[in-house]
Image (cartoon, rainbow, N blue to C red; front, side, top):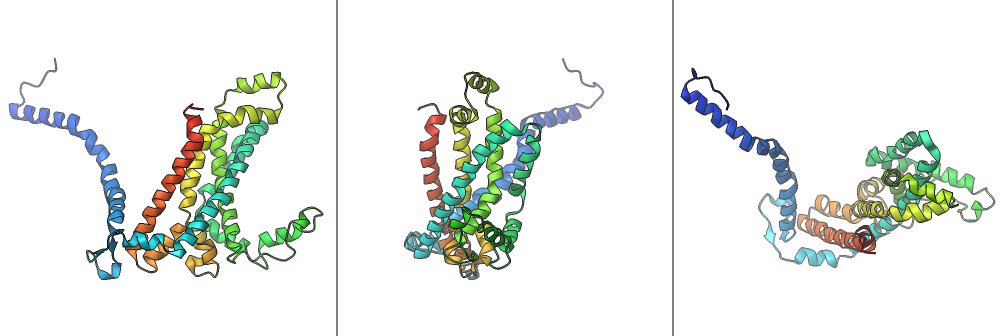
Length: 325
């Protein structure tokens, strides 16, 4: 039994026992409370408020609390707004043409890094990962210079490649103006692919390293070459990671904002209609045109659309991940 100092007053002993009981019972909740407090203030409350304001007509200049209930009017306007659907088309286009190349490049690249590079694996992976941890705004500003029509590095490289016998057949003879409605999406897609391919490479490399080496050794004994090992061992065992990586790509690309916003000068560029994404259109609706209700409705429509795409991705990859196929 725990002994107490008999010379201590009974009141002090009782107070110490109460404090000890309080610590055991409530201290854990006190330590984790900062997370929940911050989440309630900066996470849950803004989410619920955006849902509430999507049924209201309100501009910040009217003052706090001076909103007017309009029902589904904001959603009706959003779903019948040609500019919204144009921005959604741009977003889906960029999601496909910037998302698909990331994985088509990252999967074989991760396999080559794992199989060939040996002790240089960590260094090469770090180099490929650098663009991901670099500021998106800084990257977009750099590419804004690289895309210059007359003196941009990208057009200079294309001009040099145009002199090659075979590549010259597929490349334009004149410099490309990347800041037109017809070409801006290709520029944005190039920026996104360059920035996030290294992240997906790291994901697939971690999954490949988890594959038992015995499988590759047994396949090599049976006469399988590197391509056959990649096709029949690596790809099937990568499907869980593909499900995870593609889900992240869908969510990220459908919320694409920084790269098009910087390349289009915040919506003032002549190519805005050709490259404006749904997230960028939502931002301009809220902070340029001060229509918070419509902007909130755009956010929730985009949320539902992302949920549908994630569900379809789950149908494609999820059944195999769960072992149903």
